[in-house]
Image 1: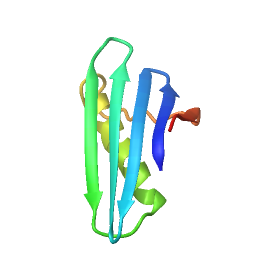
Image 2: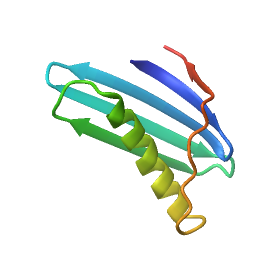
Image 3: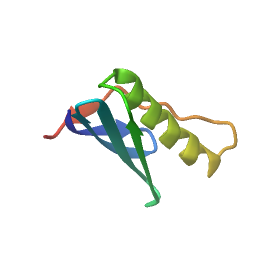
Amino acid sequence: MGWYACERPDGWLYQHDGVVSGFMASNAIARRNDGSWSAVTILANKDATVEIVHLVRDVVDTVRSSSSVPGAVLRSSRRCYRTG
């Protein structure tokens, strides 16, 4: 839990996850090197699992790739830094 900043080839991904009993939310804000932004929020009605984090990043990648190269999904790098 907390904010994460992930360096990616095409920009940065900022992500925050939170849990309350029975629910988990994951938010991601992506900034491309060209200055464009994308944001995704997913709320799940189950306790925390890592799958929701991957789902948010996959949705961000799908949204971002649809505006550049059809069919291309840009996977997040493993260089993520916890900021909070």
